[in-house]
Image 1 (spheres, rainbow over the protein chains, first blue to last red):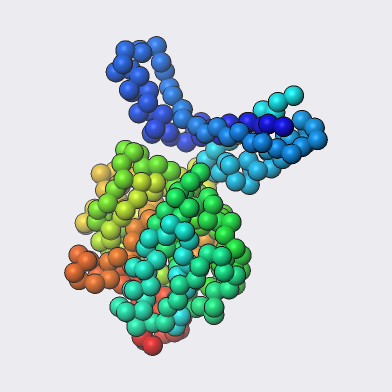
Image 2 (tube, rainbow over the protein chains, first blue to last red; image 1 turned 90 degrees about the vertical axis):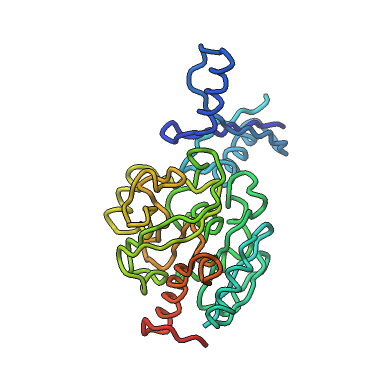
Length: 80
Length: 237
């Protein structure tokens, strides 16, 4: 079973990379692009009996390793 | 007095710390590989700078799970003096042994230069021989040294005097221009609640001999040696 984990900086944390990307897009003429936030995306191949269990494992590893709760939050998606 | 310098895959300031402890200060020093489980009776532990595990995922995020970190945690819990330098500071934050996190520098550039820091607190084992307000010239070399903690944590650090070092100009003035990386409150180094664990982004171990451009880092090593000798004075073994 496959789980996807999206890790993003908390809104209160300044993201200089996202800012730089936004500025690049503006200089390319994409004036309609507002703020850009850069994040991380993980695909986990899981040995799980159910989507429920897969979600639980993915959340566990996100809590322990994939995300740093001081600066980041995360979201988990599981294939049905 | 025995220094243990922890070596992670990707550590690259381990020899600098070892050299300073052993050859500049005449102390006993030993490297401890991250897969080991014992600190070999060390009196002081240093987590050195570098790029542990290639900085993969986040700086220090993988190293905190190394086997030796159980012994390091235990050592710190018993009050042992533990210093995290640069990547070592990042590891201590990831391990929750120090508050906050180190983000990408505000200008996205890797900064390799000498900066000034002001000693804010002298009641840690690594600053006990310094004077409050003393300005140290130390090198920095990092891409992710932008100290962040949530507002409540920063407030708590301020009110409990746990910001040990702050970036400043050569006169000791804390200004936005003297802040190389965007750190909140110009934080260059902090300590834990018990004040025996200190983390900082600058490299005191690279500023202990005149031909390195500064000897200002010596005071941090002399402090811990003095603190352990119980006299505040330096007694090389």
